[in-house]
Image (cartoon, rainbow, N blue to C red):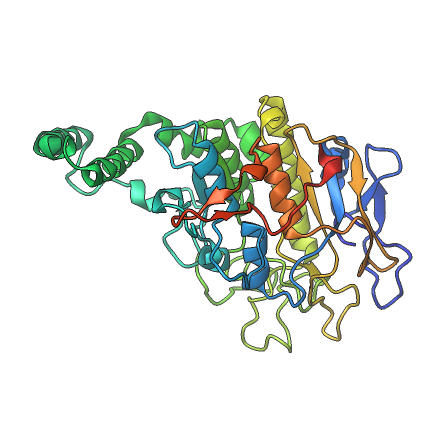
Length: 415
């Protein structure tokens, strides 16, 4: 009710202080926390009837949305991004086809290539458990930084020497040829101007930087666009950090407080959501709506606007999704707990008919009453939008055919 599905008539102990506002689509309302996105409703397809794991924990629910299979499936199914790259390849030789930006904690642990080759794994840009702070002017992808004393010319000489030594073996051994492809990809990553351009924020005009926002969230969303523009097939952007789990310097300051939505306490206060329930772990529950939502509204609306202006939105599916909803009733700590029975997600681009709302929840937003969808349906929708024939099925290494999703059905109204 604080985002895509306002509930002005909810019971008093459920209500948000934020009211619905009209969008640029007659009859469609969003929360007043999203004024910029309200002006782009004609480009969005909002699904108000998504569900997730019945007993949603963060790892379980994340896994279901990454894979389109239940977290407790009897086998390890690969990520949607891994399947997309395996099936379609990539449009950029120099970059991996599936990139995770910035590549951080919980989502980092539940991603998997399953039974697919390791080459289909996402490249996770972060090197710390909580990733990096992309708003730091000195931020670079650590694995692309040259080692001391290794300039471009020296690296080129090493590559030529390795080619000479490997030549005979490559002609005889399939395994050697497979290994060679890894070396070639690594060399491209280190030396390609296309790669370095994709990660260079200084090339972006100030107007674009300011529109996205120069905070961590804005930088993450902007990097997502740059990677798509470079030809990366599948990009997942997660925004949850600060860079380290440190003591917060002051109430209401973003340093030392997770930029997440795990608002079990103080969801509407003007400072970190930690309190009596979190005790000393006050930064765990993130920053509340008055701080988080303006950042989200600005950066997501900028992404849709920018990709549309560049002609990227026509052929790129943008999915805004979280792993679970929150309880319709506010708890005694002034927050909302985990809820899997109803939530909203949004889509844009790739032919999604804009200006529509799909599905419906009840008076307090806690139960789906029309057009219930699941993470498997979400995955099936992505595959269909990418032009993947899911009826063909995937093959495990033992030759056994396996469905792309757990009986998922594409969300028809998005086509």
